Length: 154
Image 1 (cartoon, rainbow, N blue to C red):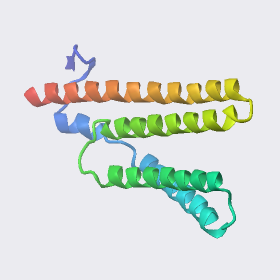
Image 2 (spheres, rainbow, N blue to C red):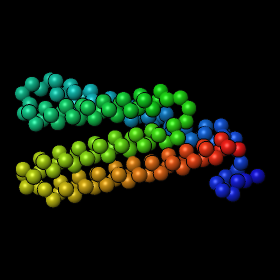
Image 3 (cartoon, one colour):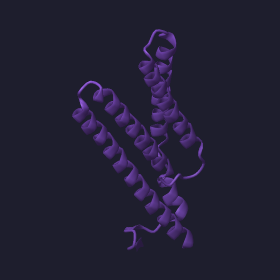
Image 4 (cartoon, rainbow, N blue to C red):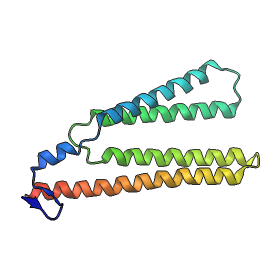
């Protein structure tokens, strides 16, 4: 028996929600990459005392970005039950935030050196890509939430 509204075989809510759980491996890899990045940039930042102030700020921000991705992975891995793409929405917001910061930093640095068009194109592309990722994650979360609500009614 199939359900024409969703074009999938009729299954229990628990069966469908079990298949929607995010890949734990993906979160482990994101966490390890964020932690490795934070440790590497943090170690470089702390062991190079004669860095220019702008480089120190950049290293601090890169360390923060890596630590944030590691914290996101810990959050996602410690949630119980299906996230219903909530993790994708949070990751999308992080990506959009960091892409916007990167674009702003590129613009400031290159404006002083005459490469503004390239920085605007590159930064704009990063922000646009992150916005697409976030939009798709929000749409997917909405779909999964509606599906869960439909399955709970039956």
